Length: 380
Image (cartoon, rainbow, N blue to C red; front, side, top):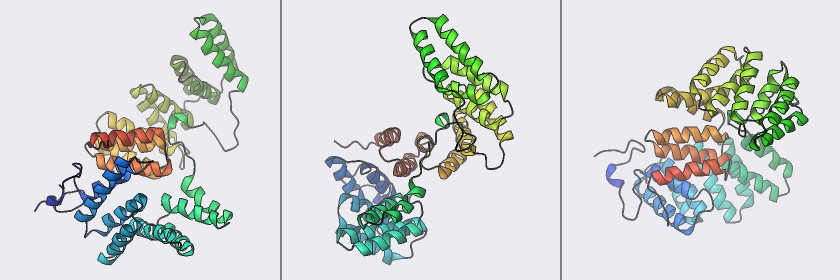
């Protein structure tokens, strides 16, 4: 009998009437989780329920699959069934690693809370979080419970590690040398650039040039000022942004921060050879613990994927996502890379993990929707 390589389940369990053509129990749980991720419609809930019960049938001897399915049954409100499945999973054999243990405890906590055992739910959510510090669902649930009990201070201690704000997209990093550094492009000069863009749109090239010249004079030999001017003109005036970027690198050719931003902006402009050249220069000059190290890894993965070096791309993008799972661009890049290489379920799982950090993010939501469509999952 053949086996599905994703979940190790008998191949004859991969087809059931009424279930979308999704191979394997684990894959069905992931698709169901994607359908339930954000305010699902009735048809999405029905399809998710069908997928979950099919997955439970196919994965009845795999505790990890059963626990993940039980968690989604809680989302559907099927608490009694979730409890039955979770308890059965715990009886099969020891759960292999900390994340499924945390999920098992999370399911138990949700059920305890539904049944009014608030103290038991609080204790078990805390135990789940101790097993798996990255458990977003347990962190949020525990914080809400603490808050309802008037334990605001404890609620605040749970969330910062879990829900810290990180941009994850090198193009939009604020260029900093430290937490208190002021902008090097004064507000009045930033407004000059805005006015220059307006003049240019009206066809007044001379007026635009005069304002740009005043900004250039202010920036002088300050590479950070040129870089901030490049960021300010990136969307409305790309050619001017490129010129500011060139000047920033010309003034500070050994500065890894400037080189990293230059590589990122070149990638944005689809100038991939320049991006690669500045990326390599930044890597050579970056000190240990470099503040933008993960941006370099992310960019290396994106460039590798474009030139077909899939091994390097997967390694770099996975490493970047591991370091910054809350980064929208980081999560999207890895999810879409998996999907583009024929691994849509792995891509969907990455998108869901990223959405756990960034609920309702529209870009991640679009990535999730595209992968579901690729899988043929189209609820009415």
